[in-house]
Length: 143
Image: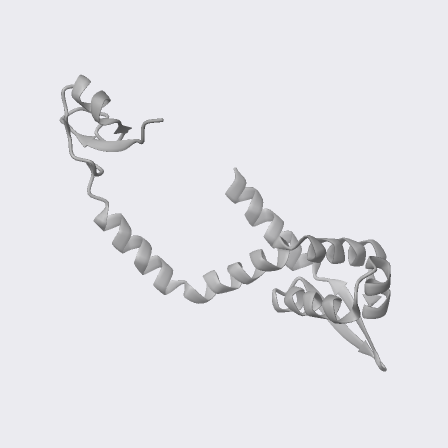
């Protein structure tokens, strides 16, 4: 399989990537690098990342929280029940309490679940407002 590289020639398709033989066949000269200078886009992207670092870190936290299959199962379980104490969650999932607590901590830091104390018992409920935002964003990204 031939790898794809860029070429430069004066034609409307100078942003496309072609193999060296395709480039020569089209009358261009092969340089092995993109024909277009993207340095201004790179500078803009770096600036946007720097300016929005906190928001990007928060988004990364949410993505990390939803990436785990176990955390998805925990969310689904809590959604079905409304709210649940930790003991009921780890019992239903046949998982150790410490593991479920660690995963709930990650979900809580991503603001996907909220906890309330009822005496010695901590109950967890899904933060539907946050979950709805996340679903909306993922739909936009996937479009």
